[in-house]
Length: 81
Image 1 (cartoon, rainbow, N blue to C red):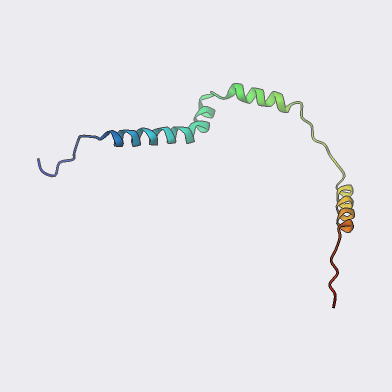
Image 2 (image 1 turned 45 degrees about the horizontal axis):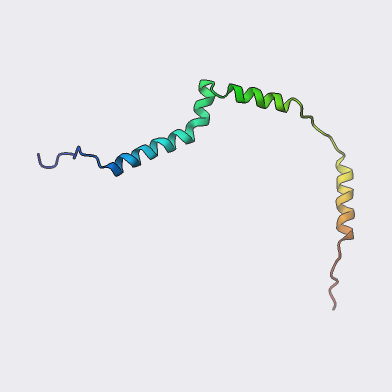
């Protein structure tokens, strides 16, 4: 039949198709693992590690003063008229 779609697939087309499937699977893996619950162990370990962390509150005024002091200590170039 003239004009019929060729059914024969070359090995290059198969390799490209497989590469596309692997690429899509790799990009969608995080969303897939969250939906299926495959990353629950990782979440538990991360939560356990983060439970030992604490927020350190510092005075921003001390930081601002230190920055001003450091900027004032920098050498400057005076423009000569």
